[in-house]
Amino acid sequence: MKTSGNPLKRISQALRQRRQQARPKPGRLSQSGKVLTLQGIVRMLADAVLINLALAVSLIARLLWIVAVGDPRIVVDQYTIWYYERVYLNNSWVLTLLCLTLFTANGFYTYGRFYRGRYKILVVFQAVSLAYLIFGALTYLAQSVFLGTLGAVLNFPRGALVLSWALSTTLLIAARAWASIWKDIIQAESKRPGHLGKESIENVLVIGGAGYIGSVLLPRLLEAGYRVRLLDLLLYGTEPIQEWLKHPRLEIIRADFRQIEKVVQAMHEMDAVIHLGGLVGDSACA
Image (tube, rainbow, N blue to C red; front, top):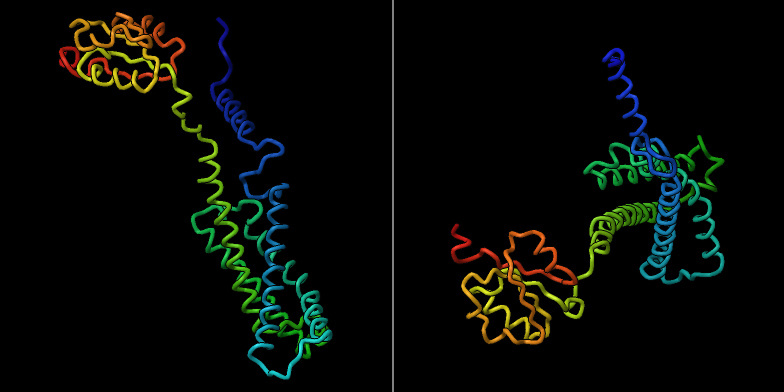
């Protein structure tokens, strides 16, 4: 008999094969947290939409607040609307780019180690807050002498900035919470087989149905319209079910449920099985 080579060599080859098998297949999300897939890009676009939605809602809310609570002489004219449009267009791309950069660095779209942990909500909160802090600092510096040339671009109202931060944080956390609920509950429930209705169960096999319990269950099944096949050794005769012996939907097979081949034959074309064999009597006490 020919023996194999060095045992250490065989072990190293086995470990190498395991590592190759553990590598993610093409088209699947890598668990290493370093690969951005199409699914990650879709989540990135969804986050960009939520950020811009929060930004637009905050500007609209600020405008309505000024009109409702501010100076009653203020009129929302074409210039006011144009001004808020320019504020949104000049600042939205900066904030969106900043948020997506920080989100990517925190592993939002590649399932980084911290993002996959139990503190996902805290990671999202920190990333959004940091992005808005940096954006707020940029808008402040843009009005100073250091970045005075950017004052016309980065000029976002402070009140709207706080509201936008609150909305962005809420929307981004809610989106991830909903995705988790959808994955853990809704999809799990949708994959479960539907409950069998009464109309889908017509033929019932009752094992050991000629005893104490079976004598009560058998007439109820027959009255409910089921076709019943009874598998019982009839050790004590048929007296408990004497009244139902000639029922057209009752079939009796005299056999021991410990005989596997008899049980297999009895289960042919059956929709459900009720096992009462050995629950009470001498069989249960043996």
